[in-house]
Image (cartoon, rainbow, N blue to C red; front, side, top):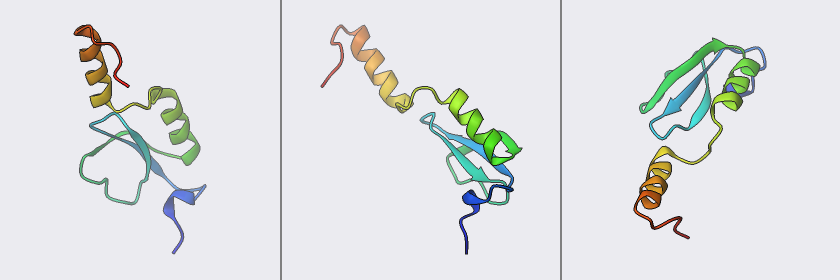
Length: 79
């Protein structure tokens, strides 16, 4: 069985999870729990362009919030 994600002629969705992380997902497969369709159905190239345009910060949203809270508390970045 070949990987559905490798099909250049397939139909795909872009899905996003609660941490703001994006993924391409085959249009013929059920979307996994915890993920929501935010683009598609579309061709693979269109979905990858959407991800590149919208997922500009790779940090999980919980980390962004944590860092913002530390900054607001005057603690700065923790290393």
